[in-house]
Image (cartoon, rainbow, N blue to C red; front, side):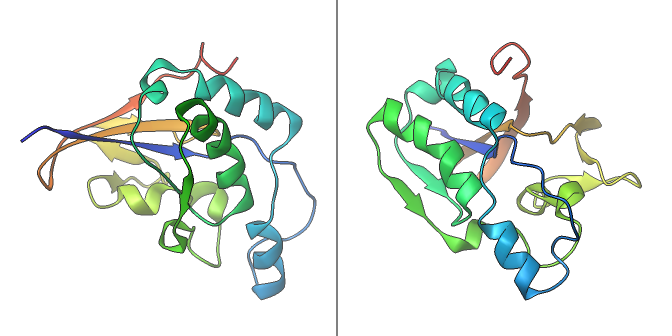
Length: 154
């Protein structure tokens, strides 16, 4: 059986808004509709040109606006629809700046005292955007790697 490759992408930069976030339902609703900044849009377009993302079979996104906005360029370049699944949404309330996509990765990673993800003694630097490549053989993870986007999204 062929290996399955999954690219887990954290959305690009969003517009910075002042105020308390993710402390109640009203601020959570604002968080879910947060849009990409102009810089985030540029990075998303550049990310979509990254060679590993130019030949994919399916795209899944959370229902959050910023996630769909990041995925749209990848979807366009691959002539694919974006499948929406709210199970991919961030947890509801709390400090999402430090924890965001880490919840999905907790299946394979540990969190240190600085809330950084650790996989096989390597720290994953979860920025916006961020690209994690997971390779599965059947349902078993055989590789997890953070891809360096430094030259890709600059």
